[in-house]
Image 1 (cartoon, rainbow, N blue to C red):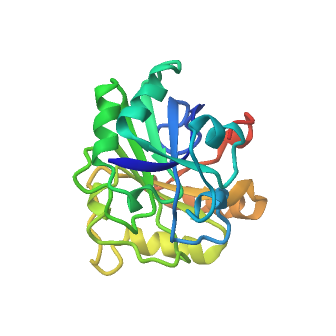
Image 2: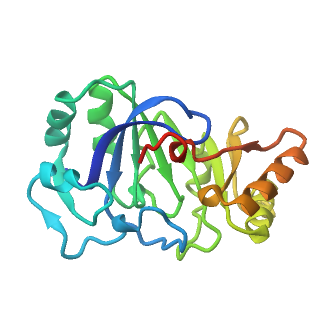
Length: 226
């Protein structure tokens, strides 16, 4: 099986429960969710930017260039890099591609695997990821799937305005029983792009949540990591 990949690089996880963990980030190409504040819009499209070499695709980070790689090629690429204990599969929306073979090759390379998804596609189902971050998008163009929520080890809601806080509260309450969640799932609220107003709202929200919610911030923006 092949995967459309925008970039692969080592980094430190910036958000949520695994913040501070060294990881190899694998950013897949393609996303139909369409969040207005997305900070990786270069991953949305697969039109006109396919290149033949990962060296070319990964040389200029944050471009629309991507490469199609087999799992064997991915394993070979990783074998030439400093080993990391975790791999993070993100995007784009990574679950628009079936992730089972990618997760398997990462496990065979002795890495634990985290996936971050909006919950709008089924590619994580049966893939065997060790950690799933579900980050539903209130204004996304595709709905949150009820079949995906039971996989979430953590739920992370990005907040731009007060309506996002209301959305977060509705999800926590089960949206009138529509969604099922893991009993031990961690719940995070995260201000968009370190916005001061959104940060203040998130802090107040967490302090009033009686310990239900935790605050996540984009620490990569403080340490100049992508």
